[in-house]
Image 1: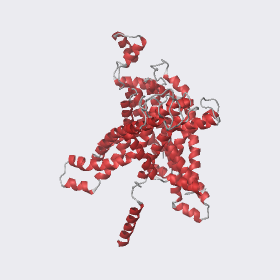
Image 2: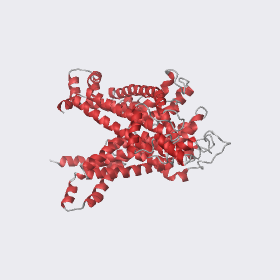
Image 3: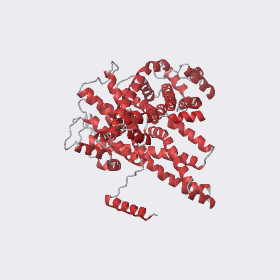
Length: 296
Length: 313
């Protein structure tokens, strides 16, 4: 009982696990072509639904394709798609947010009302509707998801930008005669981008989930590019005979999303996990305690 | 309080108008000429005259404002146009599919509420113990697992291996259990944290200390004094999860072969049937706005602070 409790508690409060999962995901995504033991699309119709063996560590799917290779290459699909969506959504969101934060007044009012309307709608419904009008395809999916995701980053950017604009150094710059362009591009934008990028980690998991969901519905990544959601839906008709081909892609995707969610949660709680060794942490704590003592 | 409700009502109406404009704009901005598409459907290699005829028939040659007005007028009377693919009227199709989606979403919400209170109290009653950790892990899993994976696991575990429930269909209560669980797990995960954190915060407030000084047990304080305090937050979060549940329905309906509105929406998206996409989007957006209105009013009834603000306003 006690060991079980310890295990669950360790599981429940491990930001390290998050680091591990996210790090592994990024590593797999970047190195996928060199790590995958087989061509993910090479079919072997004589060895369909093979059990795990030394040749195929995780078995093969209904077309005899190596599952491990497909899982690894899917990490790349997911990583690239997610990065593109976040890149576009953050660029638009940060631009709108910082402009609203810089030029308060009616500009801010108008921009933020638009953002409110965007936020009022669930992102996947918006993305689906856009795909329904403009058709399926890789870039349509990326743009549809970016369109659904920019309002969130715009709201955060505005909040951060307003905070930055209220800091004394911006006022000093104004007094010193800095031009609006200089304040915006050299001071406001860089400090906003840094803060918003940190928040984006929390969104990354949701974006990965949406890409997989769209692919599951046949509206996202199109074959032959392997993707987790698509692997799962491909294996679904054979659920009774080959359940692992359904469970594996779902499990990997879940681990990645758990990683991003845990990371995002600890960031939201302002406990940005620092990869500092325990020894240094203790030293820092001792230093901080000394300061407290030294203060009158 | 009535002024506050009036403000909310006005905001909802403004949002509704914006939503209808959005639905209309989406179809207008569609690439390709709709009239050509329909004329080609009727007669292959349609002539210019035939295309003009279709334009006239659908009123596509009129100014945008007039087209919007006539579309809105039709929508208000339940006339949502005709599916390009099947030629059927969309309004009756939506009406016949709505009960299935409503059953799915309402049942899923009920399951989510039950599970969230169970998990939340499991954590709040014994903080730091095994139950708390289990509740956290389930919440994390529920929030991170894609719903199609949850559905597949439930089908495999409970339907295929154990044979407890049918894998699809709408016959009887047992066929609804798996869809409800699939669609309800994500909201349950999020809401259980709301319950857990809300109860913890309420227990840290002075009234909880007073109650415990009076000799009330921790359990009695939790149920009698802390629980009403989380109502506004909970209702708000429940409303937000309503949107997530419609997204869930888009996945759950095809997975369990349910022919609901979300399934119709998905078919429309797959075949680029603009009118169906537009009609379903309108239904979804309208229900979100109404749901949010209900949440706002519900919060006012459960949160005395909001009520007092209304009296001063």
